[in-house]
Length: 462
Image (cartoon, rainbow, N blue to C red; front, side):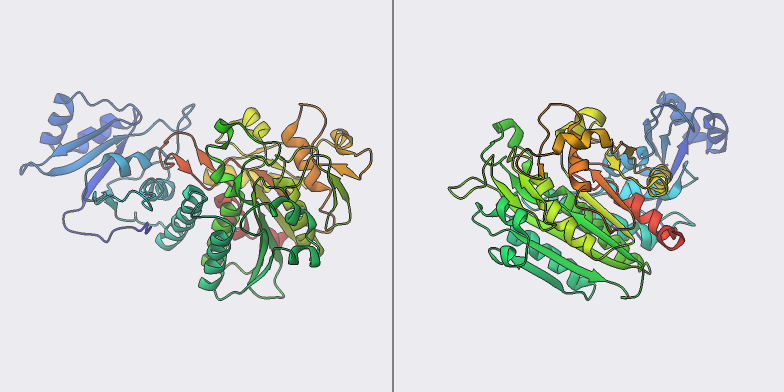
């Protein structure tokens, strides 16, 4: 869907942002009729309160919208996004500056998102004129990339299986003049992607890996790897029915990588971008991989399957090994990898893992800067031995119930050696409930912070 700002018009309605501290002075600047109407309506400048003020003709003449005070505990920086879902149809503009005009405008666009593939609506939505001094083009391509990712995650697997996800990647590459290298089915064995083949071979649609480049060959190399499990039954270690309900989102890591790639390419950053997406459906059939099976990975390490429901790290292992062979300057992977991450940090705060302190600090800094939050978790090396196998180099799960997100990250670290810096993000890619700017359903996390970091020239300064 298209998320774009409106063009200025003569009937554009102003939105006045107020706080507890500014309300007295802001009210004094309003026309007397508007001030009296606000008083008679009992308007109070509590965060999230909105008042539509009529003009002499009965039409909306202005909107009052209350924000939390700067620095208030628990304040949601995306709160202005509520305007997109609460205002009646019309064209609006900011009459004064909110705390962060660019973020408020982006929140408005992101809240305007609707997933209409199966249930369309003719309801007209409010539109916003881009605020002064805000980069219109940048906010629109960020919103478009997030919408692309949300659409992919929200689409059920009967319409977004491995073939359809491959086609979505090819379409993105085509938009930017790039071509994809694709390895499918039994060719994965011939091309040395045995773990991807093992995980996906039971599906009616063949497993595959899709790989494309963008940018000058002599530029510094940034590689994105995204987990593309189109649906996860758990395999023979089958999930309970409640655990399968939103497993269409298990390709959220791939959607994150593609959204970020779209932003990077639209921003025309001077980088050599590479995107690698391993794609499977973790299904059940007579040829499904089994607990106790042992496979030799692309890297040469042998992996014993302790649990078939820990399949994401297996396909990422082969993909990361491929990415690592190219010795990229920065290597990022994104995956809806563990429930343990949600137990520790909930759905809104993805953990990040990296041995590179400078990279981790930059990610945290830009996450705070653009309000795309993450939390650094430790790659605690003493836990590494929990993955040692008795009859193989390693197992894909530890034998105990503890530190599940950490041990998953440690498993992935075994397949990264040559990259100059690497970070792993255990994203959730889903909003359990609607929040300002973040509708319930699929969502893209961490992409905006990495875009901000790369646009700031981080890789060039390393």
